[in-house]
Amino acid sequence: MSRVEPFGVFAIRKGYATADDIHRGVQVQEQIAGKGGPPPLLGVVLLQMGVVTTEQMIEVLQEMEQARARTAGRT
Image (cartoon, rainbow, N blue to C red; front, side, top):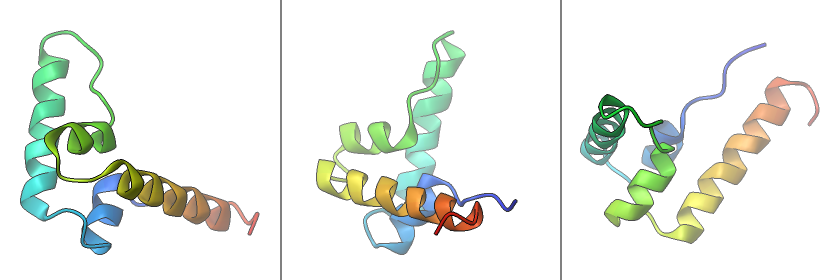
């Protein structure tokens, strides 16, 4: 079973985020995790940063789910 690409890859491919946006979002995740909390999902961080809209985040998540279904053979 192959692995589905992460949220950031999908967001970049769709033109919703840049590599720099993803890097900054991951840094925020790491800062939160460094304080002992669970890191928030990257899509949520990007939404809070104003990089993506709610609709764009949902669209990326839907595409990720479709990719998971394809890799699992559930087309």
